[in-house]
Image (tube, rainbow, N blue to C red; front, side, top):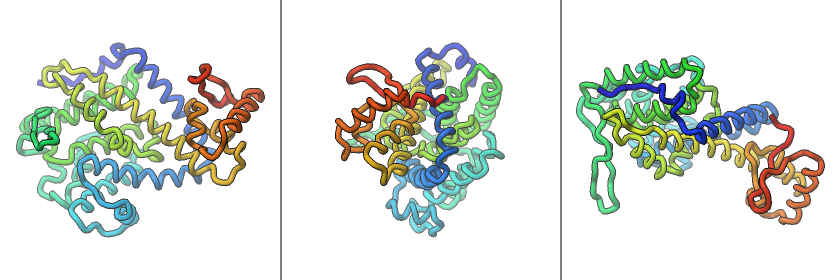
Length: 349
């Protein structure tokens, strides 16, 4: 019998991982600070994120259509093809989370609801129902060969394991010594190892991740697509799942790979927010003002090269002059030296 116990998150996680959660928590507070000042910009980012999330999560599973059709479906157009029906279902489930997360929680009814929403238009007989036949997590080689990457829980044991998984999650989230950012990827890994549905488990897992982040106080998923980041780096995502599922049935698996991958994705979300914010906010400013705005608006330390990539039309000399002046005026602080130097707003807490 698989044992679900997350107490190891209290004192068995490497210090560098715990440190990364602190960095992300700091980025979260800076995001909230900036959101108060630029509500219109964040609304534009929200509209962009929903498109990228719907596209990314489905693309991971090979469910695709054109960007224009995704935009049309999000705006209410009637889906036509099989893939469009599944894309529309994911859109509806994601919108439900964004609009109603404050009144939602992690339980079997919610999990079944997500599955029903993404599958009922294409697989009505199994939508929202746990699997009746065994399934396998397969890997396909470029030559068409197959291998079983993981054998999930048998259908007869799904209900019991889902109940134990959710109860273990409830126990862990009540423990103030367990970081929710560490708990989320562990819960998701266990959900995927159970693999409770015949199809759609990956998409349900990403919907659950979005809800879990909201429940943990992280609304970054409202403005940056978590699913888009997973799709962009899906090779490392799948590699971490495989590493952390090894020995799962024997209760000897290592959650660290999926924890690290998850934290990296969330960090990239904040970095993507920073870049998107810069793209939208800086359009008509003078060159020196654009450089200064990039530095003051950054939520992560940035290098001279980072600035140059954001504004390639501005010379290195101009960037260096702005940096020098802002350092002199104590508007920014310098982290590191020479080529490794990065800069951060000095008066943000």
